[in-house]
Image (spheres, rainbow, N blue to C red):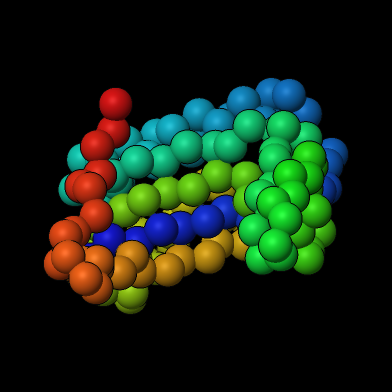
Length: 131
């Protein structure tokens, strides 16, 4: 199964850390990504650019509305994501047991829908391709 893991950070998640401590966390996170890749779990992972660069699209109303900035319903923001492969949710959760970034965020893990095809044509979505 494939899982999308979203990393939600509070605005002050890294408050009080020195640049050296932040560098150690970054390095440890990259090492952990390589560990997951070697074990056959990691498909793709990336931090996201600063939330100030975000644009939200809201099409729930008749008129399309673009909003700059982090205007979600929570103070937390999505700061990164991991796309991984695991047998089931228990294994997906266990992959973050020693994750170096986990103490600084809330992880949201959701399975991707498997074999989701268009209802009329039966055509599948395009396969994942990292480039």
